[in-house]
Image (cartoon, rainbow, N blue to C red; front, top):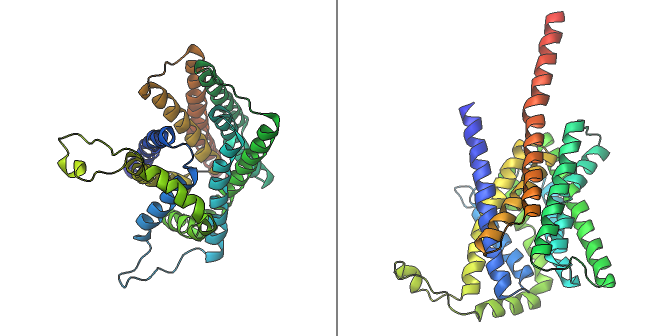
Length: 337
C-alpha cells in the first residue's frame, strides 16, 4: 500500500511540478518570440528522446528489443507528432489563447466519447464530473479573456479554419489515448518504451520543416543575454541568450511533465489521465496569473472551484466507489457459493 501511495505521489509531483514549470518557461519564450512553437516542440522531442534512450540501451550500447511491436510504437509516434503539430498550427490562424484553452479543455469529453465508441462504459457520476470540469475550464478561460480585455473571436475565415484544426487535434488525441490504453492492456504498461519511441520516431518528421526551424532558432539566439545572479558564477559565465536558456528550461521541465503523464497512463484509464491533466492545466493557469501579476476575479475562482470539485468527484468515483462496489459484489457472490 505504501509503495502505491509513494508511486502516486511521485507521479503527481512530476505532472504538477514539471508541467507547471514548463508553462512558466513557455510563457517566457512566447513573450520574447511568439513565433517559436515548432522549435519548442522539436527541442522537447530531442531532449526527451535522449533522456529516455538510457532506459532502452543495453550494456553493449544497442537498443533493447521492444516489448511492443515496433509498428504499434510507430503508429503512436505518428499520432503524437500530429497532435503536437496541429495544436501549434492553430495559432497561425489568429486563434487567441483563450479560444485555444477552451477547445483543448474538451479533451476529457472527446476521450470519454472515444472510449464509449470502443465499448467502454462510464457511470453517471463520471459523466457528470467530466461535464462539470469542462464547464469550469470554460468559465476560467472566459474570465481570463475578460480580465485582460481580450476577445475570444477572430476573423470568421481564420476562426473556422483554426477551430477545425483544434477539433481535429482533440479527436486525434482522444483516439491516441484510448489506443495507448489498449496497447498497455495487451502488451503490458511499458511506459518507458512509449516515452522513448513516441519522441524518437517522430524526429525524422521535422526534416521537411528545417527552414522554419533555422529561422526560429536564429530569432531566439538573437535575444539579450540572460542576466544570471552573481551567486551563480558558473551560469553567469555562460552568457547564454535568454531565449535559448528558456528553451532549454522548457525542454527539461517537459521531460518531467511527460514522464509523469506516461506514468499515469500506465496506472490509470485514458479518461482519468485527461481529468488529471485538465486539473493541472487550471493550476498552471492560476499560477501563471499570480506570477505575472494578474488578479484572480470572482469568476476565475468559480471556475477553479468547479474544476477541482469535478476532479475530486471523478477521483472518488473511479478510485474508491467503483472498486469498493466491485469488491463488495465479489464478496457477496463468494458467500452465495
